[in-house]
Length: 234
Image 1 (cartoon, helix red, strand yellow):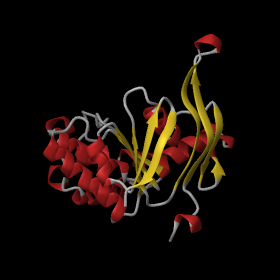
Image 2 (spheres, rainbow, N blue to C red; image 1 turned 30 degrees about the vertical axis):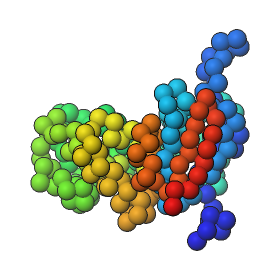
Image 3 (cartoon, rainbow, N blue to C red; image 1 turned 180 degrees about the vertical axis):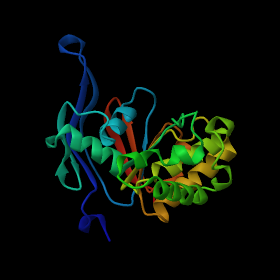
């Protein structure tokens, strides 16, 4: 189905973000308007200070824009109550971070099932779901290990499984290979690509690494808080 016949899953309209006030005000994002469609794999690229992380935080409902609108499946998110926004972020969005953000005193499957605490499901069903996801990222054999006993690549696989725990609409990945060697980074990117192509998740990834753009279906470049390029990759 073409984009013209598909409704966007995310739409930003004239979105700006300011930090500070009056003469000390800094513009982090300036009048950004864009649409992201279901099952796209979008990479957002830019150097440090370009505004790409701020844009990711807006998309991930971690930061409210100073101006403009954010629509998620046509609904204006910031007209909702804060508690509703928190639930949407927890249940509809999965996050993959550069530094993994795993809990060191928990084992692998316990880390994966953590998002399940936002549901009313039984612990056994949450554990079953966690083990199934670990099998998909080839980490089931290490499910009882503490995460700080794992390599960086293994920890990122666990983080990917955790991001899928609640079957989210959207996966947001912030420099997911930044701490990995080239071989491991490629393995992790193949897993993320499969989330898009096989599991049909919308992927939004922030990176400064131009080599990662080849995994995406669309590349958005940002500089000085403005989109400078938006192109299809396939």
